[in-house]
Length: 87
Ligand SMILES: [Zn+2]
Image (cartoon, rainbow, N blue to C red; front, side):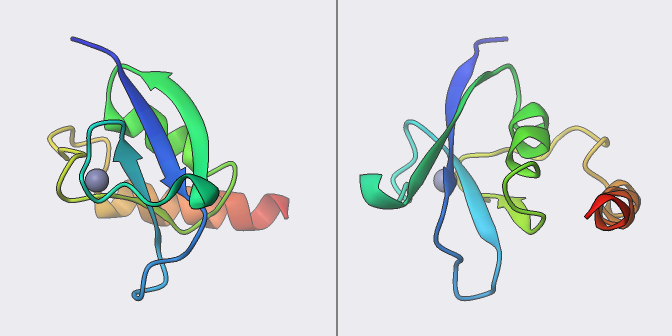
């Protein structure tokens, strides 16, 4: 699978989440608000990296395809519980 460059939006969206976008996404925010996550093989890996910055990081519906069952609600629930413990 081709690697893509992923960005995280530093500014929260109106729903409170901070969204991850690929380089090619038309919804990618202005450079001022971008955090460069780097190259990843899939959006799951980008999400894991983004969680290091913001616990409410989320995947853009337009450019990040959620096909892997790794990103299930139960996984995110567990992940959020774990990261809260380390703060
Ligand atoms: Zn996007």
